[in-house]
Image (cartoon, rainbow, N blue to C red; front, side):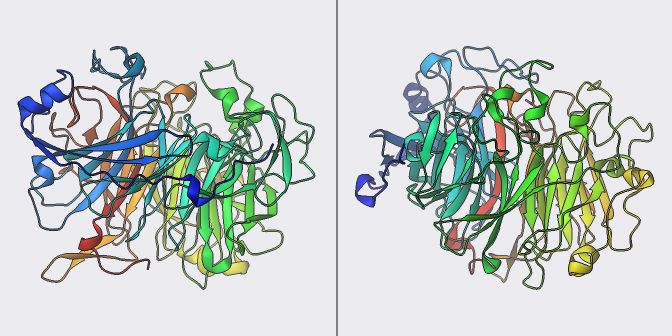
Length: 607
């Protein structure tokens, strides 16, 4: 099977359709089928649309509250990629409040949306949702990740992990959002389940498509190579390069042509050539022509499976590095099965190298290292040189050490703790990590999620002479013994007594300067935003809060008490609520988060 051709003439970019309607509360009530208007009063509605390769017209409709127009002249925004929580008044999450519309969309499913939250400290509307940019006609996308960082001029790439769709948003005019392009399932026949994105300096993006081809059997990639897959959400996944208009520029195989070890990389159903290629996290060093991706799992085998009914051995322990000298033809140059650590677990799937989720590369030109973390293994790994022919990865931190900062009982460990988002500050000093704290099988009243920060400056500076390695029992709880091992700077517990916890996050590297308050990018992280939601169909729903965390120059973490929910007045913004700017659609699940600024309000481009 060959991929669908993607010449530009096939995309009818139905010029962005902007319709400005200033509506009164009564008018909005009528426009939304009697669902009611948000308490903030009049809402301005604008719509933009594109016609995708599947022949359908896709729209984004903004619902801008009065607070979107009032406030400081220049503001910073937090984008939150969210999905409707459940149809027909029956929320599916453990944390569901029962807020759900009785008159929503097809089959009771409300629209997914990109929420725009005022993230400007001191603003009268700080922490308020000032716009919900809703999507149609496709619903139940299961909104997942955005890219890890935004720079002036970038589009925002957003994945519908289960709809097999990538949306590209134009955020130049925030708080208004416009639709720039849509990449549908038919645009990526060799892969499915889009997960994460890395935006390049030219505005294009690489996306990790964790699942296999749309149809079982052979699939031909852009470079002419062929791999055999076992179908949607199976194996092997791929790397897709997407343009700012949503067009597929290339599909590249993530699987070794000769296949991988059957013992290490089982597939269900079995493939003629087995593979662990289920790429999830992604990070790029354009100056080094390298891309790092982490393999997660053959995901379809875990959807809607109660505990104990899935195969625990379809999770992955591999990290892949690609040469991206030819941006449209990423070439796989190494696949590493990561080493096991000193913990001895009763369940082998909870050992340190199991279920890789995220990766983070260094930023400074003098550094070539990268980090990777595991979700069930609860550990962080490092290699000093991603350009090496055989990168030398080693474990450099166990989440158990972070737990010991606030859990004196010794019950909480890295085993099955739900390690998630991982990012390195632009100055290569601080490594930030969120942990859901699921502790599978544990009492949720005793467990806790957390955000922790490591000072990795010595480790990164050591280059190829790095010595840190977690390989002894004391280092599980006390940190590495070598002098260049990361120093644990701070730990911030975030309790979530549901089956979720702090999963995704974003770094705020924007600061205002000058008498006009124009924003600029810095090398320091000012704040972190986190979202308490993973994926309900994988058993990780969460309490649906989005929290703001202040980061001091020393790396110390403090939950921002002024970032409060506009309805309850409690810390963090709760996405479980009855009414949104777009109507009374009830509870929503926030996943991807991203800081951004309108183009006119920020100087410069990429640092």
